[in-house]
Image (cartoon, rainbow, N blue to C red; front, side):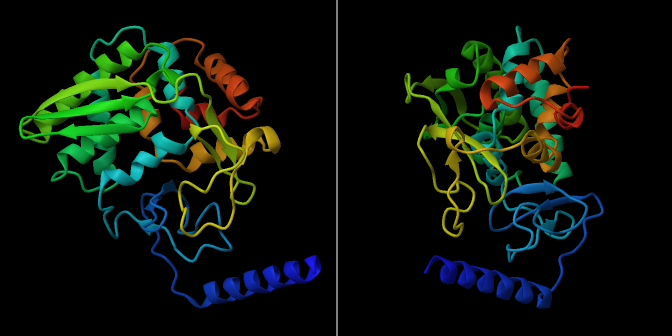
Length: 297
């Protein structure tokens, strides 16, 4: 029975692969920048092929020059689900706010422009997406005719000093508010949802991605394609993965975090990142490239 099931699965995959060969190819990006209209991920790639499910995904990544991404909402996935390496790195480095908020906001807007992401007519969405990307935390909104309150959830799970995060975010969103001509007062607040519960860390053996989000469970539904993905990411305690798989995620992920980190002054950045990777994912850094991908150079 099991052999028959395996044969059926192999036959189905072969049929999918044959069908893929007959479909139109995607447009090549002159900037190597792509986005996917289905899973809403953004990629740095040499060609328009899904880097995670290359022989199975029916979609082709879309060149940003060919079609604009509809909203900054898509890039929230980096903050919500990806390993919190860049946020935790920044948390350990930033001891005073200075002009960082404005610098981060400018880097964010430049990123949106470079990636041809529509944002000018979506001020609240654009600001919310920024907060999620920077903080690595889910963020709620309370909105009335005069005020928008953004509530960052469980910041202490990512940031060592949540007041520093709050001050950076306040400065950033005030800059974005003026730029986007949002005629409402903005407040920033925190809420603790998880308490002492651990945040879950997961690995998908099929696509090789690592995730960090939500309450710790034994397995979860794919957070990027919950309606279509047939594979369940497993708790990292119950599986094996490599540093190369973690590194790949930042190799092809857009450079938003490198843009943030390049605004910081620091020493021993490599050692700090190495320790985060060791503590959180029990991996040893075996390639210098990850420092480049995250702007730690």
